Image 1 (cartoon, rainbow, N blue to C red):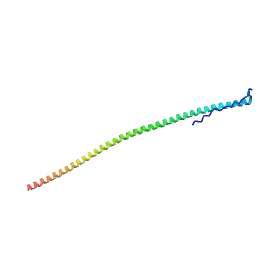
Image 2: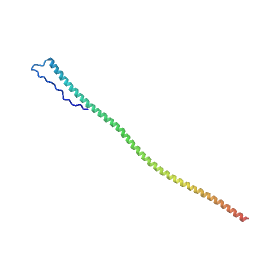
Image 3: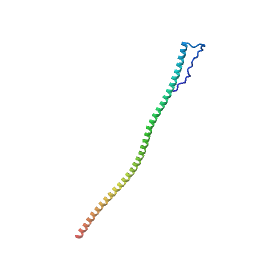
Image 4: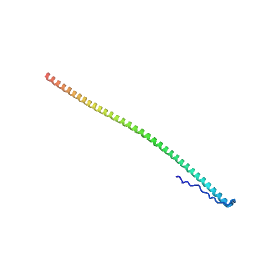
Length: 144
């Protein structure tokens, strides 16, 4: 916040007679000049302190923003790496799901084949038993 600039205080110059200014009046003039000079110095010091404070506040603000941005940037980098990992894992999962479906289909085909083998073996045993029965029956008939 800039304060409005004030014009320097005006000194009042009294028209003096040619004679030397005497005690009280001279002292008052000297006090007035001293006050004006000290007011001017104080104003300059205040203005310099104000500028320095603004500069320091700006520096602190910049440091805080940099610190905050550093943390945000780190979070952004971590988020991007997590997203890449998620995509990689999703692709791997899809690959494993496809492979699992293939294994399941192969296992089902093997089960069907085993059942067919079992059915064929059972059919063969039945046929062998029937043939032995027929052979035994024919021998019995022939021997009788």
